[in-house]
Length: 300
Image (cartoon, rainbow, N blue to C red):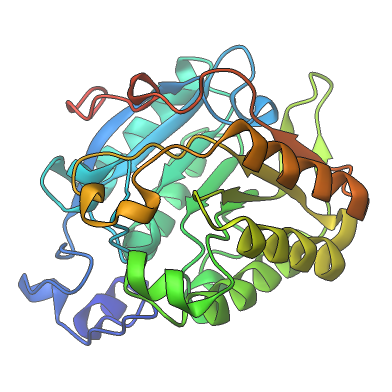
């Protein structure tokens, strides 16, 4: 079984080599026990993911990134969540489907790939038919993503950085782009074109998100250019302006502010000039703490 991979864990680029089956923890701060902080309908994803009914989001505890500006700090740090079984995770998927979720949206799932695959198989054997979304940081290993082939319908990765300096400073991974670029290429190989149903909901495809950081407009432009020149219309690009400086970011004064309207407009205009048509932009008050859900164990 793929669960044996957790005995010498190298699922993510950190390659900690800890035995999570025996309760050891690596960079992600989690053992082999599934820990989920929230499972509920979520309305704040891209329109073709949330729709009117909502996306069935399952927020996993722990993370291989550790970004200083993380909006989900309580779960990324492993401080929130409830331990559940693979059987219970499959039940959660089916309950979300019963609630009319448009999809099952796995948020920060990378360090739990083996048990998630088992839960998807079990849920499908019991009638789960809606698409499964893999919502991740982009800091992934191709070998781990290949374990997901046939189980994931929609990939929703970030591409946070191209330059090594901000990747190292804010996320402790100077090799971020090396891994993320290869990971996105693998996602596109698995799901080479987007498909939508009659309600314009995505049922297959790849959407790459980029969260614009204050003061890093040039890196953002380089990322959009790379994505469009490399993948063209095979993917959708989501350009996000919702960066919100939370507690702890005061130690990084250069990003201790929201991005300006001017910065965001310049990036969107640049994407349009490049020829990007398959894309999403954000409008209105998206950079608000109210957009961050409560991780109170709802639905778990």
